[in-house]
Amino acid sequence: MAQRFDRRRQDTGNILFLEHVNVKVPDQTVATTFYVQGLGFTRDPYLMVSTENMWINIGQQQFHLPTGAPQVLRGWVGLVVPDLDALIARLAEVKPKLAGTKFAYTVEDKHVAVTCPWGNRLRCFAAGPGFGDMTLGMPCVEFPVAPGRAAGIARFYQTIMGAPATVTPDAEGVAARVKLGGRQELVFRETTAPEAAYDRHHIAIYIADFSGPHAKLNELGLVTEESSEIQYRFET
Image (cartoon, rainbow, N blue to C red):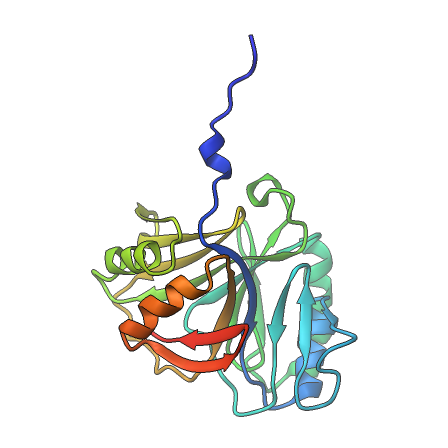
């Protein structure tokens, strides 16, 4: 008898890919020490190679780090790395160089929690079955949201962006989970903690239907920048 598969497990929505997280940094040298020497990632050798911006490669994803007043993402960025022990050794090595900044790290049960020199929080996980074939990359970004917001956020991504989204309770509370391609997600977790002011940091996603969401967002007055033929920005 032929083996049966649930083919729906491989379905993807309109959001194909989380491509980068963009936060400004005030010092490119300190950023290099943290992202390249400490985390073990590489600087893109072809694009943004001057001193006013830096693109950091993490597998198929990137951090974009233009020079400016520091920006701090609300929430945390999930990263997959090949070897947590090697990561911990590198972080210990750069600790003296990053003294006087907000840099910190702790070894948790299933990940290493890292804070960048300006306060951005990362959770670094070892590659494994839970991340499919991703051995180096950015599987998720999690944002805090006010209580009662998760369901509406899920509806927004379903109806406006055309992405599968669910609202699920777990050990940390209620969260909306938005599927990006086959192995990434955005998580919006409800919390009663005060919300930090938005400082213009952003993420970039790739979508298949480019014009449909734009028309819906534009009708709602949510398009904030018509960047180019291949990019627009929105805020909700």
